[in-house]
Length: 232
Image 1 (tube, rainbow, N blue to C red):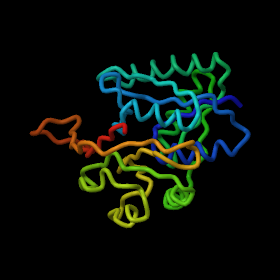
Image 2: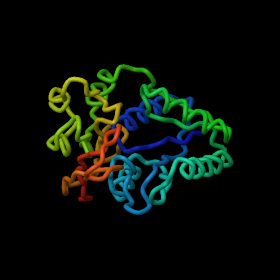
Image 3: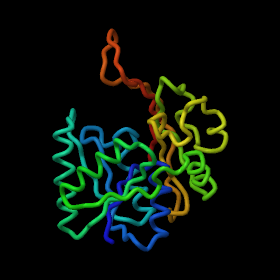
Image 4: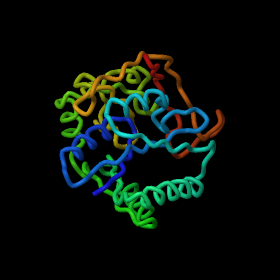
């Protein structure tokens, strides 16, 4: 079945893509990634467009980039996504593949939105133990660097580290080993789905605050450390 793969550039996407490529059920037509139009970086991960394009090149799949305007609300986002998916459906794509693991509300949202345009969502990693998934990722030879961390849960030193057994051992209690609750995000630069590694160097590490001013509080996490990666 002709499919689009929703690619974030991180570890869950990479492991999910690897598994999907071992399954002849789905023919992956292209990768689809959402970026900020203003910064040309992957949303939430902060990875530069140039490195995303290098990933796709080394994976050997076409890359479609969906650029989000600044301050895009959910209604505008849904409209843009629906338009994109309608175009894909017209090209014969019937399924959209995601690396989500256990966030039921996110799965419900994806399935509902895709059903409106006649596509089906597929979740190859769904409800599998996250500690087993991340160790499978490492055992398969994947290599990733952590590019953003939730500042409330992890200190700045976790940003820029390799995602390896040492990193997992150092995670505080309560932090999901796959970062499934948004604790951290990663950039995969090598592994069995790559023809050659994606070269990069570490740039600046910065703390970014979202959604509140200095004298306000919010009921959600607003501070994240980002490790910039520079194309080598």
